[in-house]
Image (tube, rainbow, N blue to C red):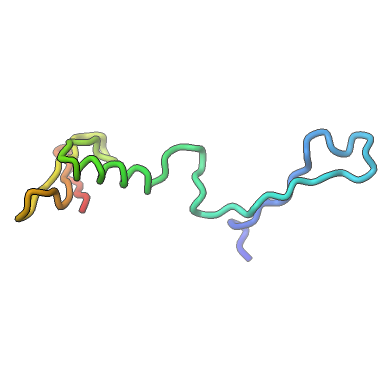
Length: 91
C-alpha cells in the first residue's frame, strides 16, 4: 500500500466526551485525481481552453496568461492553439 492513497479515520468532533464508545467517520482514501484545494483541475483548465479555441475565440494561455489564439489547418475549424506570448501550443 502507498501512503499517498490512505488517510486515517478522523474522530467526529465532540465524540468521546462522556461517551463510552467514540464514533468515527470513515472517509474514502484520497486519490491523485482529487482536486487539492478546490481550484480547477488541469483537465478543467485545458478542456475550457480547448472549447473556446474550437469556438474561434482567443483565450488566456494556461502557462503565462498571454493570448492563446486558434491555429487552423486545411479546414475552417481550429486544430489547436498557439500562445502569442510564450509560444506554447495546445493541440
